[in-house]
Image 1: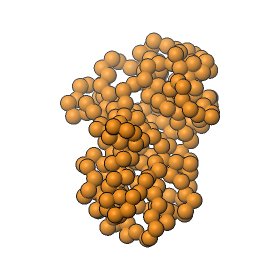
Image 2: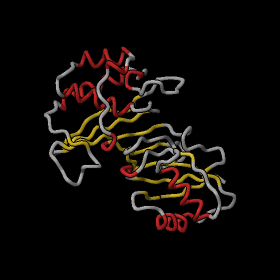
Image 3: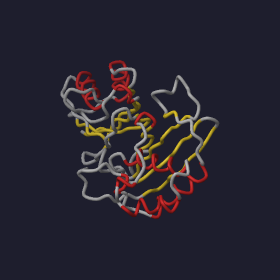
Image 4: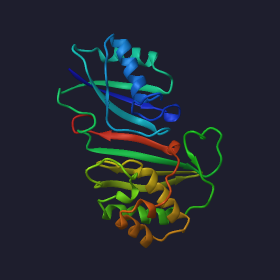
Length: 245
């Protein structure tokens, strides 16, 4: 039987989601916990990868187990075993062919910026004190909808067949000293959100114009885009599937 596991994590202490040698990862930590609790070796397949220091308010992974599981009891046991920065919310039985990565239809990220120094947000939001033109940044965000090829925002030498992504949502909101950029798409390239935010910040600083921003996307050249903002301000916030509420 196949199960989806819904979880969240603070990525501060992890080298991303993906298991890797000699580094602590969310996937490895969760694999170990599920294997211990079920007394059987389990390998989870995640809905995607997050980089070192990136957080997830909503993440899904799937695993297979021979017998039917009692979800609430398993959730309690896992949360008792897992470290405090990883939490399991739900375990959902699905069809055997369901796939946490390939069945996702939309993913949503947020990038958090605090404009006044906050001792409690140092690992959870990027502190940036320079004044930004949020209206201009929102105008630039709208230009993302005019494009599908986002190679200019992708990490170079990445192993993908296409740089095409369909953007569903992209906008900034400001509340007091906090700025949040929300973006959703059918898929994302490696480092894409952090590079988009860095380039939009350059728009907000009026270092580049809206026309410049549009030309950067058309160039397909990572060197022309802006800097990659720090990982600790980035959150994976939602993953959509057609068969999970």
